[in-house]
Length: 201
Image (cartoon, rainbow, N blue to C red; front, side, top):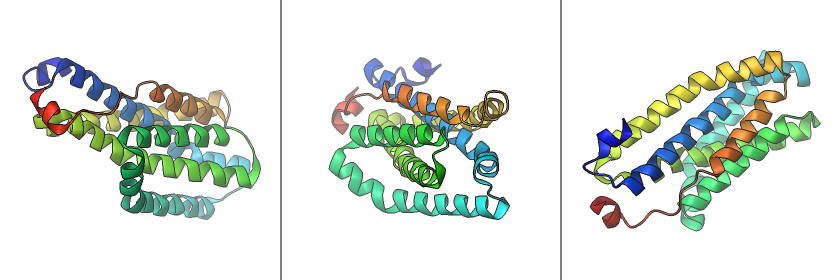
């Protein structure tokens, strides 16, 4: 399926890197959307938060995400490079979800949410940039595949996390999410070649 769509324009090596990035996007969204879908239950059962408290937490997450994506992604990417920024985002998500898996009190909750929000805020736009940087003339097509993978992740993540929360325990969706983020780290490709090399490929 991927091979047929890109056989004329994308080299096999570059295509393999893009597919790995798309898998990372899928895995990352599965983990993060699982957190989003179950957090209100966790907030109620573990921390005693009501609807207004949970809504305030999500509003705060939204504000931080906007701040990270609007003001932090560019400077961080310029300083660390694309691959290191992706690695930092995944590690941040991994630790945030891992901390959330345990009842470490309010301090643990704040740390977990900060790690998760910063990690996801860095990860999402940098993944799109990484795909575009490798896709050359087929950027639109591959970004479409990335968006489709993200949409699929938003279906799988809440379903899996909800089942884990109900049947395995309230910490399990986040422990599994942390494991998924750790797995995604193993898929990170190296730094892309120059734009001319990508296009020639």
